[in-house]
Length: 322
Image (cartoon, rainbow, N blue to C red):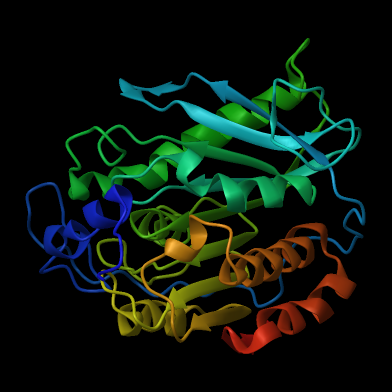
């Protein structure tokens, strides 16, 4: 019996066709011509996040929506955040935020997807002590025209959404006032959202970002001229990926000049493990949580746990250069 392909994953198949002709180190100009090669930018080798300790407890999770608009690009953004109260259970809409200041993770969905598709993963991040903000993109989300070339506009969308999210920290009366740590920020994304995430560290470098997590991503269209201060990167890729070839993802990973690690899933495809509660999701979520605890909280003990979580159960292999 053939495996079921979700609409979000099926729609992602056009990613390669839409970007065909773009090399991993070039991106199309508005005129459709390939621009000159991007210069290599030297980057500091030491991550800038100060040492600290991540929360040891698990939080309840709240969820809310922001209505954002960047020059006519409508970007409704879902926020999952640590909430007060008993941990466990479904996220509670507009719940009171937990006490503390929490790092921010900007998440980008794949082609034909929506933030809610990734709720099982993203709520685990929020429960671990991170505020997760996930924009719905105007031309690559479910129900839109699925214009894959609009992915090249998405790094700027994420930077704009980050502006608005961080502004909540100083907004009187907002539930996240004095709860956001704008000095500890990461970007993450799946498939086309992985392209978006890589773009935030290359052609569209946002210097506020301290780390990145790339699921089934490629550098097609955004290049591999990683720039700015060192920002540790965690790549996650299925070796049986039917949409973004594993070799393409690894080629982008190999170009990262900073601390980095690659979690490879020998039986993994384009990302179904991110959409359901499976043993693979537990390995991916636990590994990524410890990576974020280390790269955003500066938690040295979390760094020691990353490889242990990554190799638990012989579900994945782990190339560790962190």
